[in-house]
Image (cartoon, rainbow, N blue to C red; front, top):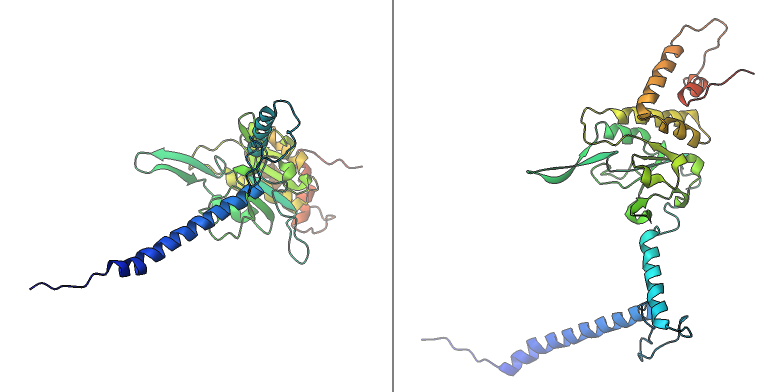
Length: 304
């Protein structure tokens, strides 16, 4: 015996296909409405705009020009050139916070590639990044609250998002002659308090006075430069430098700024360990730093 059922085609059509058809029509209507709204907000700059409802041509700034289509296309090209070349916003960082919140005095902008991490490749792993030795120590030393840190950061460096204040990506750069250039004037910060660390001169051509130019790191796991770099920034912080640019320009003249700072810090440390005379008063830990700041930052203080 075979089991038989009563199949009602019209019942299936009513209960299954008809609601499905209604849902599809509703989706198409919604899609058309969204497209209509987009046309109201934006029109193709290479052609004369049209009324989003009637489709009629609307007058624009080029309507009275000879060869109006040519000028519209040219305007369209200029628009996209500016869109690609200029940063995505006027202020790259939000306004400094007010009391009772803490706003660090200095802002450090860091290049990620070949400064904090190095791109590598092998047959087993493919493309990947390796962290520079002492990277975690470096971020801990110069991160919030000592400095305001901005970098094109990856989650592996600051997974909790507690040490780095802002992430800046490629859309925040200015595209000049095939190079993505950082424009620090858009940071929304006092440039006297901005420290930018990079290795590629073309990337900081707009603000060279704010840059500490460091050697490119290619993955040497015996490198200790981040320790010295952290100490240099810490010294600037403790010295309460009013304008960091002369300090950065001084150290950038050396092939390896962190190595030069380490040499000078060693000399200052030896001088500071000399026995004090009985007439000298006991000083705090920051006073010797300010005393020898001229040696560290490339200028001796002379007594009047």
